[in-house]
Length: 480
Image (cartoon, rainbow, N blue to C red; front, side, top):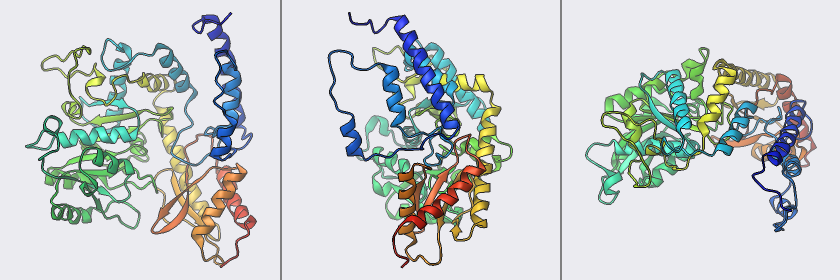
């Protein structure tokens, strides 16, 4: 007889077993067991996972979980120092399970009452941390790309003399956004989705530390005017993806105020510096922004994807998306900001209960847990940069400001340093001992790490430098 998929006892049995498997996995990665990634080519892995689905049960979830773990990328491993993806707090993962079982949407209060209430409290907490005056507006949404799109859509709608949401872009005045040349590609993508086109994004030159140079903003705006563009917004990064550089937000805010521009801060990774008295100076001026985004699945140690979009003026949070549907009971009350109906302000309608994960983690661990994480990872990145400086044949192109460090192995005997970095990374990937990524700066290829796992230590990073040297020595390319 087929098992009832809703049978509580089957769920209880499988759930206990899956939790045991995951707990063993967390213990193993904490002890640095196994590789960070056991790399297999895409074609080979696809062959190993045939689509031989059956009308009968062929595998139990606990058994599938064991296999999925073996063949996955192990972000909880302390030697994962690759992309900006957190090793999520187990509390948050369990809260996600609760939300998945309840499956309350968040478009309107009646669909997800407690989810919308928790979201409001999370937004208030983050807004206060940034220094926004009450009442702050905002919402949670599915990732930084959607969040940047949401904020810039609100910015576009705020432009005087136009209502693109109602009238469309046909016949509208060409608009433009000023942004650092080091900004995340999601800004460019958002601009194109909003109908600005490639010419609607005007790059502002950066300084020698890869930060937006305030002295060059006026030049960029003149370039926009030459293109026939009316600039309506300027974007600051806190921090950039490539190097972790923090743009000078106070100076950008000065320019935005003087020229009537919407000031948006892409703080997906680094806006959490506001949680730390030691590093708060990196985001001085963020409290003057019209909008800010924060990826909780980066430095707030949440599972992906959860991003907060915050608006200094609460009423502007509803500018991006606004319409009524007969089957949604949006309860807009005259004179009151409808914080309880998330769907009024987000791209999503059936939004999962993402607020539960943050709320549960903050309640379980306290806000100081996140300050400690910011400070410990930022501190470790600085110590790693010092290790690089102390090592012969290594170089660091920019001093790290956040927990992102770029470096390369550059022995004098090697002329093609770009090719060497690629070979080193390929060797590290094949060994599985570490997972690091690469980036291109000033025309050259550099290795890049993000110290984002709370269990990564100084010894791990010293071993990384040794592994880089060993990988370089093990390759067969001639030194020319």
